[in-house]
Length: 563
Image (cartoon, rainbow, N blue to C red):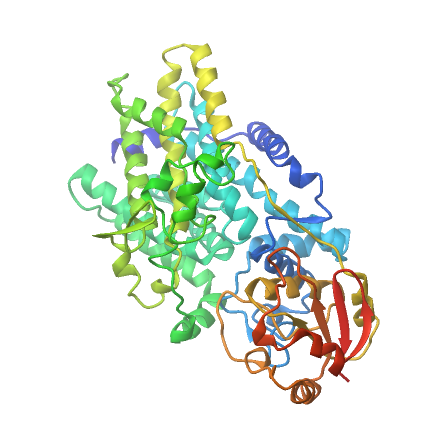
């Protein structure tokens, strides 16, 4: 048994009152940090108008699904052919929570907006509490472990990367099961009990159902832990500790079979492999550049504008105060005989391991791609693994290990008994991750859509103009009227449908095409900022009102009737 295992084995159970206190405290912090969102929780979606509208459709679709088959294939989008949802970005635990809560509070538009927002925000206190449990276990029975575990929970759940993902990707923001996976797996190794290994596999599966990338990150964690044991003990683990990771992956895969089989089958098609493995990466300079949601974001804006990917995927700020504390902890002499730096070095190794994975195929520095290749260049060439095309999302594990580093540093710092200095550092850490510049999307149903709502026939709806953001907006609008739409975005383009072959150069021919497909209405959206900017590929906008009969009009949309 390693020194790390010995320290982990010293901790007792986490009592229910303490757990409730931790969840309550982090819930209060969530309310304080994100009050701008909570103030409009029923009338605006969290995040700018982009994938968040698709995520809202996901919640509605889960709440109104008639059965399991609707979650694997649908004709509500990409009408009339429909599309597979095998690779769609469902945050399964989150949409299931919305579906269950909608039975109590209703599935109308406004209650669904509220439930969708609240289930997203729940990832902050739940993720922090889960990380608290992991850190407390790893710290062992030492003075100050509760304070250290609180720091770990805060860093893991309230970091700028998580804030960015909550605004843009519901599935990537569901991080709360990852610390529990690590905790249960470590307990399974210590106690050699199947119960803990099954629990770890269940948390692995739930993490994967939140975001499929997390299934791979859990696998990479198992590989890292084996490597750590090999280096620390100077020999490869044997027996239970060698079998446990393989068994954990196998059990999790078995639990995920209903989802994995369709994904693997679809994953053999080249069309599901998108670019991004050397684009959406963790840039080395971005680790210390103020993130877009930072109070001092303007001082990091130049760097984020230069990144090869978008700003929210490139948000990897570790915190200058956090890094200073990390350096301090690493340079301290040993404080006690048992060697408290063992968990510190373990966590630092995990940080470096996953930071390298987050770097993608090659090292990026301030937007420049260097010739230094990273292990991601191999992962990007492997079948199925290549679908994990946004390496920067591995930052979730970097923050997990950073939390453990800072938890251990907190325990070390408390021994110096300088409360004023420690309070100042804690306040600076809090301010360094305090979110600002929080965007939201107004969520309301245009009055003109009532004509579609009140039409009892079965038909589809075409929203114009088209585009990626516009496709997401059409999905949110479809929640208002409940009819299938011609557009609609999924995480992978699974098959060509009417939206791909729509005639736009000859509107008379288009009308015949839409009539044959039972598309009864066209919704022309007016430009709102950068959204709904008319696309020349959709033809001449003014000609639509001459070809089709206008039936309703308001400040947001014009509804035209096809037949």
